[in-house]
Image 1 (cartoon, rainbow, N blue to C red):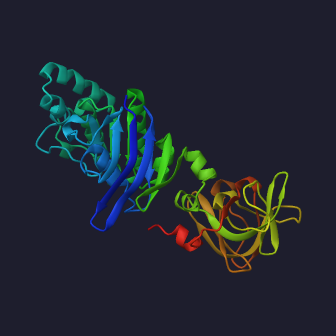
Image 2: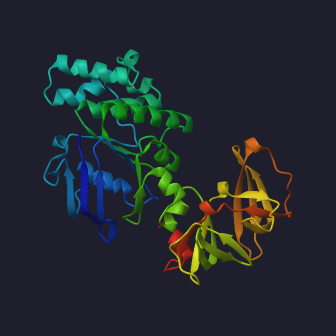
Image 3: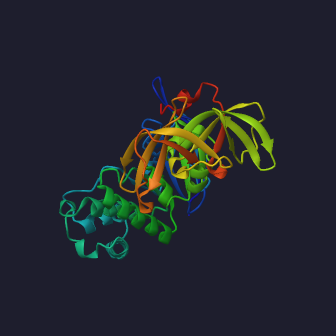
Length: 366
């Protein structure tokens, strides 16, 4: 099974830098998702690995072999596009068997392989159908099977579920994840869907403006992102200006307006201006007793989101804080303009140094 190493990879299109000094190691059998804003370079990165685009600088190694001079057809890499690219005049069996036949496999061996793949994607009974006779989800499963039929142990997925309905997309991503795990494949998956990336990946890579800014296990990136941009892009967060008052045995005490919050942060020094980030689902509306970790404000809006009630709370300094209250706990007896207190769990307060170019600039997607 292949390992992938990217070393100093850069690509420019005229004056536009699509990739800049990309360094990434993907382990054997690892499922890695790459996410980032539109135009950040994630699809260009996948195309460089596949051989569709030639990088200007750097190296791509697959199992230690340099790919620079290896033609696309000899890289043994499966590539599945967002657009469902099947031969419309060929039946499903013929579509999947195309690669093995081009490679010179006998009809018998190709037939055995295709039967196995059809069984794997649960479309044995549709072998004689044409692509147009299948649903979008079924067609994309055929596209994956065709990529695997060529003997690919490295699978590249370039937003493969983007054109499908939400329910079909959710079901299909888990089917594909189970399939590649059963086959022991190495996968690089580009997606704009954060939930998709977090739910199927061993590791998530965050890109911005042609560079990798952070990578890690999904739960680590969500609960303890090292970068402010990641905290904002992966999920949602409230950002507040604060100042470190003191370091204690349990972490830092920060001042937000006229209130003090206990955090578990040990990296910032007393007297330092900081940015704190708190995700909406980790806040709860409470009576705000004096010995609690809490913020104060006035409710400025209430929305029902299906899975939760969303409260907008405006603080004294005009900052809007979003709070998500699970619908399973029932609707709170709160109306707009009510004054409320927000309980803040210390272990869910993320503390960052103030960005050099300012918070607004740091959060920009481009």
